[in-house]
Image (cartoon, rainbow, N blue to C red; front, side, top):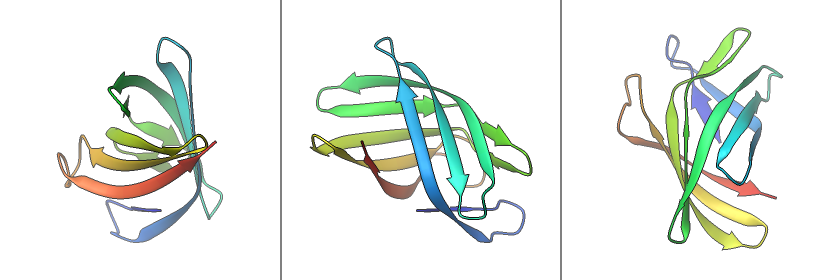
Length: 104
């Protein structure tokens, strides 16, 4: 997966995206770019039938931040989920902007 710098429009590959949440759906996310830059922020998760939906405010870190977003994830197996991201702010607001696979 890659994210795009809103100022330069340069693609920045993501090496790791960690999502953790408790039984009430409150949690955190940490996004690490291949360059080593990271951002950390809160998120909320809920289940809608067989899908998990997460909403997150801006994920912020030094010299890197990630727009408010929503992920719609479908379980592929006991260890894997396929997710589609929708930006909630910025030039691609309301659009599905990326697909990713999360592994346990």
